[in-house]
Length: 322
Image (tube, rainbow, N blue to C red; front, top):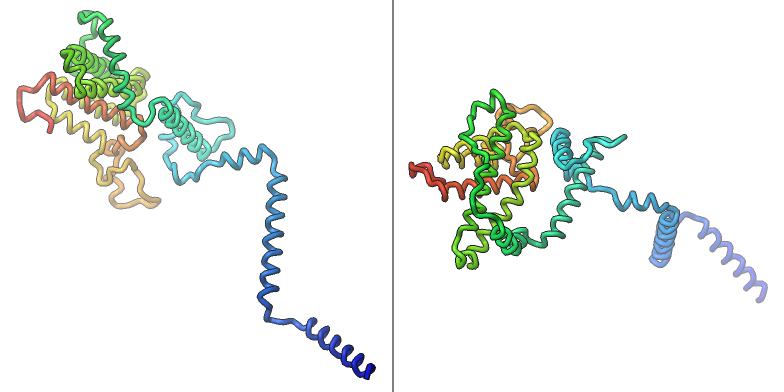
């Protein structure tokens, strides 16, 4: 009897060995879960080992990897113009076009963060808080008009084609004079008007516009304004001096939103040449979409135009802006 049991046990072991050596296309759920856990554990260990082997310099390079180029895709000429406007070198040693665009984007983001940190949530709120300081400074100033102010005649639009360099100082002094008149008109208001909520808001708008126009004045002093923008701003100042505010407003609209078939600030909408490609030219492009600085001083130009119309109304009612 014992010999029979031993023989049966030997046969059973032989059958189990043969069945385990055969390939089986089915797997129990417990074995599958166990294999899956082992693979996850192995992948986790490999990842931890790779993380420990990365140097600190490589970690900083990985953490500082910029966003894809597609999110900030501008032309090389526009990149050079913006870098020069910021006083930055147009190309570093060994820097590609993509790296240069990413450097420009990083500079603009840093400027936006610094501006938000300094001005808080709203530029208008900061200007409103500075109204009292500005009024105190204006009271300390001599209220007599300076006789040495630069007298600027009506700008000749023919200078755009003959001698554009003469336009820069003429536009500069004309806009400065209008901004000075706006500041003096704010100071000449009665005291109860200055202390009212509406009066403080009007003074804050004037202070904010003066701040926004500083980049434009800097560009005019350096004579680095793009030619198409120079033409439009010269037209605005010319018609403003002649009190033809309707035409000045038309030039402002062409400067801000453009009159192109697709006024979105682009001159190339695809990689292929299209039949309507010649309809888009750089003088029809909307410059208000270029960057935040351009949008701010173009908006301030419209505020100067509105003030000039209020102080110097035209003889012809049809020349009033809407």
